[in-house]
Amino acid sequence: MADLSVILDFCRLIISLLLIVLFACLEKRKSVRPDLLYGRPSVPIPVRFLDGYKDRKMYCAASCSLGYLAMDLLTLTGRVDAIPAVKAFVLLFGMFFVAAVYAPLLLSITTRHTLIGSIVGLCYTLGSFGVHMMEAIENDFGYSPAFILFYFLPAFVCDVLLFLLFIKRLYTNIKTKQFTTKFTDVVSTHQVRYVEFLFKNYKIDYGTSFGRLHWLIYKCRPDFKYPINIVFASTIATTIVYLVFLWFIYLPSYFQELIRRYIDIVQSSNHTFRAVELQFSSLFLDDNPLFLIFKYDWYVASVIGLLVASFHIYMLLLRYRKNILKLYKGENSQLINEFRKSSPIEVVAWSLKFKGYLIAYTLWGYLICTVVVWLILSIIIGGCYVLNEIDLLADAIETVAQYLILPVITWVLFLLQKLLTRFFFLQPKINPDDQYRPLNIDNRRCFEFLGYYWIFNNLIVGFISSILRIIKSFSISLFMIGCLERPLLLRGFEQYDRGFFSYVSMLYLDVAHNHPILRVFISHIWGPKIEEKQTGTINP
Image (cartoon, rainbow, N blue to C red):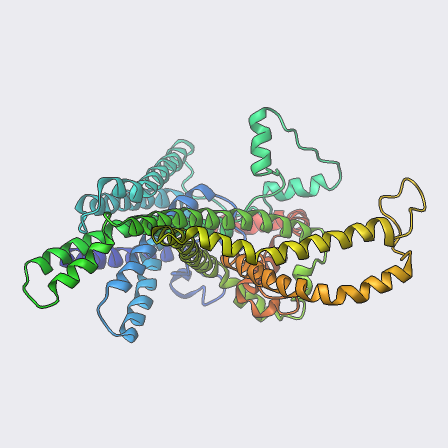
């Protein structure tokens, strides 16, 4: 079966390369020897990352299938029995394989030859659906039916959705008898609306109760659309995290199955340490309550990690829109001020890394968050169980309570400082309508005296505060590892956070090419000329 899989993958690669050549021959060169071979072939564009806003549903469905192939690549690299150098070459070849195999599907969405693109897309989608169905039916590793269903369900849904969208495009082509399109749109509809809303006050109509709930989750704006750049990378990241989550949920059952096989092998043997190995292996079965605690802690940690990763992607979408709209208005926020000295070379180079960084950071954030949360839960719950078994839980709780007396006392003294500051150390309000008292010390003798005494009290508070600061920093960093839109480093060191740097560089490039005012202005000046120039040509 493995040889058949290799042959099928090789055939997929050859067919994909031939289709890429076909789409390249459909395009015409503009600058490099346009007189040679009638200007063909040219470089086809799989995805319009720079200024693409159309067909986002199709790209979203295609990127979901691409995420499955990328996940297969990661698992294949881990199963290769070779030295790390060979694994590195296998990984690099796998990256080329993933990009090449799904390039024709993306080209069939992007090409202006919509009839050919629809036919190729339909065939490719049917092939992708067949591959996913074959993998689900084969089930080489003996997974449960529920696991197979949840694992391949997004792929089947996206394949069906993409198939219907290609059918719709093909029907439109046949009905209108227009088999090609002209890329003459200099400006998108939402960019025109953005300029229109600058000249009038725009108010959102909340509508029904469902509309209000939808508004709380995500505030729709007619003058904004997410580009394909964001939608494509976010969908791949979400797909891979979902698949890894299912693997993590299945991991304890897989581990227990290996232990049972090992126990069967040990029971059939007669070596010296047979009894010891059987006793040690039995610790990892459901008969052991401590293992059950670790197992269910793992399930809870996996769910928490999935929620955190989903929240990161959700916040990325919100922060991207907030940042890009502020930049459209010319607001020089701190986000941009830190990178004003960056050269255009650095901006373009780092913006190319954004999509890959988003996927990698989101995946690493999920992995690290899941493992750390599992360790914390296992130490707390498992430790309480062990202490309860040896009748030391009450003593441990009493000891912890005794150690918490000092932080409680210092916290009470801190509240006393705030109360004295509010009612004794600050001068009264100048006007009764003022929100706060003026920042001017009253009763200076008492302030100076208590300030000297509280040096030593605040020394103890400082020790406790420093510990809390470490805990807070660790917790925030742990749950924000997968975020690219926020730097993890301190202010002044953001340029060393390469993930954040790639995000800001992408914003730079997006604003430089897709500013609505720029696009609308160019459409009024050059739109008719561009349309006239492209009439009757092949290349957009």
